[in-house]
Image (tube, helix red, strand yellow):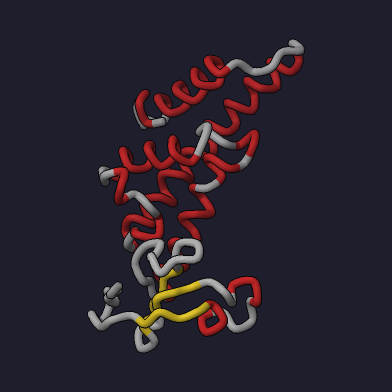
Length: 169
């Protein structure tokens, strides 16, 4: 498999995590494609040589990390999550960004796309999470489990209020 560096166009070399992160023994066995002159790299899926996305330089890696930090809680973090699962969250994100679902992976995003993810997810966190939390607390006071329809209504109302559209989630 030939992975080209998006910065210089040269082939990135397959290497291991101990070359990228020498102080991280937990990453030593993982595989990466790296362009040493550009300091651009990308990790690989599991125990394969298949890249997770495209090689990224320091700036883009930082933005991808930030994008994940704002996006992942939308589907990972218990009472703060706005989506039932990762698939639903990425479906919403692909619609918001106007990219095909098959290309909607943060490890494939460029600088502008990562900034847009941070912006979108920042808006999604604040009012929605508060509204959903309020609805859950009301249900708990009533001694009931929050219903899926109640949570979906709260999500939809919150997205509508921010102009993100009923179908945004």
